[in-house]
Amino acid sequence: MKRSGVDLLVGLFVLLGFAALVFLAVRTGNMSSAFNMGPTYEVRAEFDNVGGLKPRAAVRSAGVAVGRVTSISFDNQSFRATVTLALDRRYEFPKDTSAKILTSGLLGDQYIGLEPGGDTENLAGGDTVMLTQSAVVLENLIGQFLYGKASEGGQ
Amino acid sequence: MNGSLLAPLRMLIEFVAAVGSGARFFLRLCVLGLASLRRRRLVIDQIHFIGNYSLSIILVSGLLIGFVLGLQGYYTLRRYGSEEALGLLVTLSLVRELGPVVTGLLFAGRAGTSLTAEIGLMKAGEQLDAMAMMAVDPVARVLAPRFIAAVFCVPLLTSLFSMFGVLGGYLVGVEMIGVDGGAFWSQMQSGVDWFDDVGNGVIKSVVFGFTVAFIALFVGYTARPTPEGVARATTTTVVASSLAILGLDFIMTALMFSAY
Image (cartoon, rainbow over all chains, first blue to last red; front, side, top):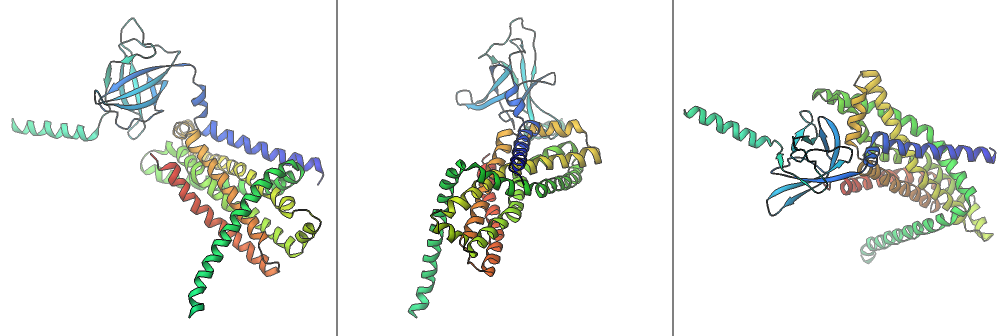
């Protein structure tokens, strides 16, 4: 085969290979959303129990993704979990916004749902969300249910 | 009595020496491989021979494996009512495990054997000796460009394999069975991490590229210069590469994916 023909075929192969890699990272993976997010501001929230929440979980308000969980740590002073949220700068929430840990679907991933309050001032970077609701832990739920049943039977 | 006691010891010493010469050969290939990048013609010819000619088998296998994953995944997921997770299942299986491993195995069969046979026959035909006589280092001139080309090709072939697998899963799952296309892609994107999953898959494929290229060239270079020796070397390449790929895959999976 002629020199230029070989070069052309090899070039085609290499370009196709890299295109496949980009396809995997952007189309099947989350590279586009990992870098496409515009400027963010960080807000903290303290939860009694985060359940199965993981870093990089979504933060949604009214079902729309507005940010991402950046880190989860344990506060040794209050014995609660401190969750840091990176919220998209385009979206602003009142200071008395509440945060809940929710589950998408029956077996889906856990995410944080924000419910805006009525304050006139907005959350700024470094603020803490005061009103939080923990993840539902199935064991506690069953425990409460059994306890309720038992006390009903006693009456 | 004395001889029977010494025999295992001698075998052990020979084994350690073989490991040592293999490691030395590997380093030599790496150094000379980098040096051979200056002779771009040689490397490009080898990429053409190793990479382009492997494309058809890799692409068709990827597509077929995607089909099978789509079908099997659908039947299993349907029991739990979560057919939407089909895209996630297909992509994670491909990107993390099947892509690198199956590409490595196919590459060992398609290109590794041809490398071993080529080098072995060059040795049997005393072409390598003739080169050495002319003060041309056969490792630098013949083996190193092949090594670099193989190491370069495997990650690209793996990416293509995984991409065609995902497309195959899409064709069967969405176009044929009728899983919702939007959920197929969105579940995939929310569950596949570009670094932890795709990136680690690429790291695996690079390691497999080094493994297969090294084994194929080393076995070919140390083959006995007879027709029987070359035949045996070709078999050894396939067996050793396959075992090395599967063993390394287990170790890398344990390191990469079980940490959390």
